[in-house]
Length: 278
Image (cartoon, rainbow, N blue to C red; front, side, top):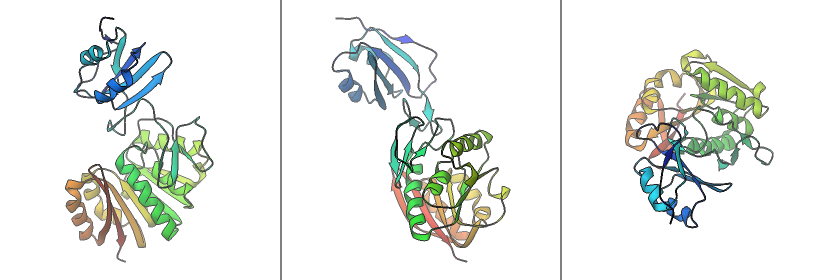
């Protein structure tokens, strides 16, 4: 029997998942990692890699796997450290196939480079937005969309692929706009996507469709300004809302003339759909 041991590649952050790389793993390693609660597992040449929650000590993993060659290193979080993946993987939501660059995919797929910007598609709020976005575009055929808190640009770019002529993405983070611009070029959509630094006050005009996938507090704070960006009978998609805070968001938008009537939930998150009363 091999002795158990753990080698640290670098100092680990506190209270976050971590990565382990296992050389020459035992035959039952995959099952053991699943039992330990691994968040993601990938087979590598000669071994395995996995992401483990911080509640599982690396020493316990080494003991369970009976391996003398386990390397522990920080895991890379995505979507503001709410999604933990070894690498981004293809996914489908709202009829859109989202794939990393270099992956074979059919025409019409949305390619997203790995970046620190929010919007990989793996977070429930983004997936919900993609699904609702696809439904509205199929029903209303809006000519343009305003994406508030665009992040990686995933929602604005998906709207363009789904048939919207032009999209505007706004964000208060310059790095997010850089990521969105890079993704627009990657998908040959740069001419149809306008990117602006700032919040709803940074743009003028009105849109038939506005989508905002941000946190609850900013959604409530920007409600008066956000509804000014809605055109006649414009549709509004709000996400990034914990189900426990749904009532507060509904009230804030009802106060400024938008009644949120439709909603979908997933994993403790909710997306609200509203329409301008004017």
